[in-house]
Amino acid sequence: MVRLDQSIESQIAYNRRRSIWPPQDLQIDSSKLAKKTTRFISNILHRGTNKKNPGSDKNASNSTESTREALRLKPRRALTIQEEQQFELQDSGSSQSQSQSPLFRLPRNIRQRIYEHVLGNSNVHVISTHGGQRLSHKRCKCATCPGFAFFIERGKWKREWMCEDFRLEIGSLTPLLQTCRKIYSEAVGLMYRSNTFSLKNPKVLKNFVDWIPEKRWGGIMAVHVDVDLQGAIAQPQSTTAGNVVTNTNPWDTAFVALAKLPNLQTIEIRIHPPTSESQTPALSPQNLSFLSGAKQFQQLKNLESCRFYLLEGVEPEEWMREAPFEIKTLKEWEWKPGFTRRPLMVF
Image 1 (cartoon, rainbow, N blue to C red):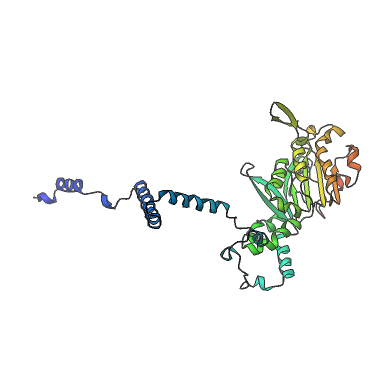
Image 2 (image 1 turned 90 degrees about the horizontal axis):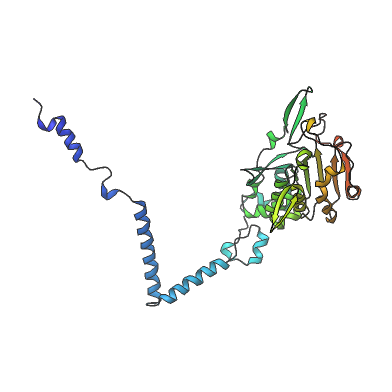
């Protein structure tokens, strides 16, 4: 015989009567909690304003508006210490001397050499990521390396090539600059000044200039541009301004952006053939019309040289023979010391 309180039926009935866990009084409704918290804070603020100005809701609203206006007009915290001085911030918002750091106990010239070793003397290849919404970069120590290229192996198949120095130099330039504002103030100008920036896409070139703060444009000294001839002479893009439709080549817009850099000293523009010989366009001066935007470089006062590396058989336009422009063939491009093979296409 099984006792009634130990039977299966009694156990099922007991389980049905059990309350869910956690109990109702311990369950949390996030929406109700948010409403209660908001109501509680608003009541405290309301009581605080009533104690100061009893019965004057108008004064309370005016005080709130004045506070918002003061916060809106308050200058943002400057990135560099030099900029902070013109804002006349409170002592609480200024940077400390950071004399406790061993780095800042060194003389300024020694610190500059450290910054140059970590951030400078590199060929920075700027690329786009996230569908062109962001810019990234890779670094190598080659003076004029394209970064990526195609080669013909044994005359039959293409071989992909990537600079081997990437394996040693992969990494971002920004972590050191993000350490503190004093390092940023001392090193950000050197980062732009001591590196060569290499680009291959007109949209990336335009975004690279536009997304850099205008006050940093003067720090960029050297830019190398690799152009795919087949893509450059393709059908230009159509832009609509009002009711007028104009055809513009993306490289025209990119060179207009590049001409904004006032202290450029060296520019290299290398024209590369397509990967397939069947796609090679007829060589004619009209094929170089997309370079017309480069005429603006003559207005750069500090520009020492602008080299055009062209395919053999292409006759340059007359303005490309004037200083500071130089005409060279693509075979004269010393892209990597000791590397005899020439890239078929830079991509």
